[in-house]
Length: 339
Ligand code: NDP
Image (tube, rainbow, N blue to C red):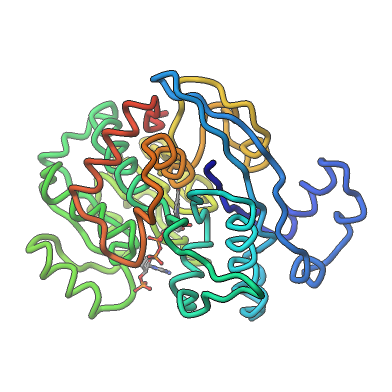
């Protein structure tokens, strides 16, 4: 059995989902209600691999909402993640992906030091961030989509916004060692971490976002968009490919312009239909087949009987692990989204 821990993108989103699922009493509730709501298993489904193997999974709604961070309800936010993990473990799930902000909260608030949740000791081996598969899929999206938009990667400048993050640093390693792009622009806020990454890669330039954007043929977004950012779209290259790896996906609103192509990053499509409801809720274009790559990672680990925290900690994703999960991804019928 594999599991997925997810959350909705905003209070407004939570209210509309509650309404559409037939819980109008929840739809009227404010943030306080969601702060005290316990985790729920809201979907139970089967997934069949391209090899014919079938596995079972459960989706755990953590009831975390991003507004909890914005409104300094940090204790509530961290409790949501720990409680959802405990709920997954108590329900006998072998390997569970921490989707959306779950793994970021886990790392940023050092939840590994809070193993005990009421009468249960969390076994971290039963969880994965899913970031190795996400990074692999984003790299494949860059490699496979760029030529279709007239971008030759051997002569291209690629900017990675969120370069020092867990996914961003893995993407930078792959683009440097495997893809062989002409130039790599490293964008984030903390200079020391940027300098360390550049030293590790022995490649790439540290550049502020406003300087990176006009130079880039491809932009990989693996940080949340800075609020209130204004970009003069006429200064950007055309064609330009934007791969939006963040959650929620919000790049397309800012970069609506002819010649700029926005691709939903870190999304895979399965070759067979999955009979579940959750991808309707997060507005996937083809909800029966499309899903977040981090969720697919827990499916892959279950298919492969690799019941271990395959992606864990920060900035430890190696090319070898990306190869391993990429090979499993193809074998079990997952493809990177390309349109
Ligand atoms: P991390 O927290 O490890 O990294 C975030 C990165 O973004 C850091 O480099 C950080 O550096 C940078 N950053 C944050 N804010 C800004 C800003 N305002 N401007 C520029 N850089 C910024 O996150 P992950 O790598 O784990 O996740 C990245 C994104 O991917 C998230 O949005 C997450 O929700 C999404 N995701 C998508 C998945 C999928 O399946 N599609 C799966 C998992 C995650 P600094 O703080 O120095 O600026």
